[in-house]
Figure 1 (cartoon, rainbow, N blue to C red):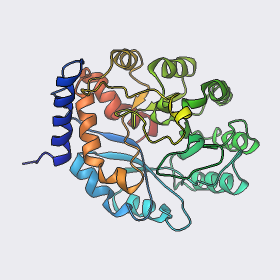
Figure 2 (figure 1 turned 45 degrees about the horizontal axis):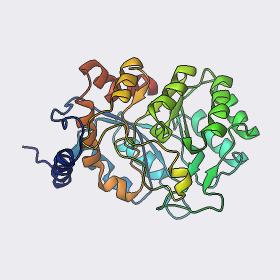
Figure 3 (figure 1 turned 135 degrees about the horizontal axis):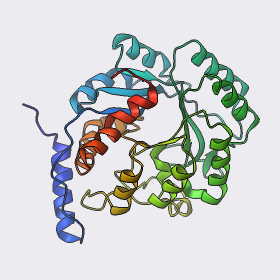
Figure 4 (figure 1 turned 30 degrees about the vertical axis):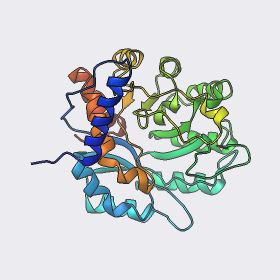
Length: 318
């Protein structure tokens, strides 16, 4: 008999208390019980050993996974080993460095394209184009890590990839919408044959997300971290530009998000973006919260978000 994690019991109690204190819809009760494909996760070397165990406990069947590259915590060999030990369970992406600024380096472009050409990887792991400093990460003078979407090497790498297109995870957050949406609108339009994956919906609002996906059919959106409001952005001015969670205080999907999911059922992906040890430690509880969210959706839509869209995106066999 599967036991309910203590953390989930605590979350449910918190929702019940919050619902009693605030005006919001009824707390969700029914969970989605079907298959799950985690469309975006990443590991450093010290976390890789527990990935399969955590997936099994959470009931996650498949995962799109890539390595985080740090000088002392390079997870690339661990990711390749996971794929070798459990064939068919993982779709691997190219490793993610943290040292790219303004444009992609020649070394990064060559390493990424050669890994794809050799068949080791099936998609491009996350490129941090516009990433606000987080309290648990690097603090920069400008308050962000930034790579221009119009960089010469960005365009050179995408031009090479477009000959044999694979999905590309392109991370940008909406804290500078007027600067970045026109730039990414142009990027998506310049490479219509490439499917771009937008992590966390850019921490944007439902209208912002609809603007993106209605304008560009080659953009898929992960819902990772939209179960909670983003609270870790260091600069309060940037944080103020980000939208709250897609659920209310009781965990109920907000009407504008429900309408958006129903209008574009083929564009959204369940994902956790488990990455650092603190996020992996909460993996089962995060997945359980998403089962509550998915349980509020019509069954065909819930299945699309939970796994069908990811299977189609990564061209993996069911």
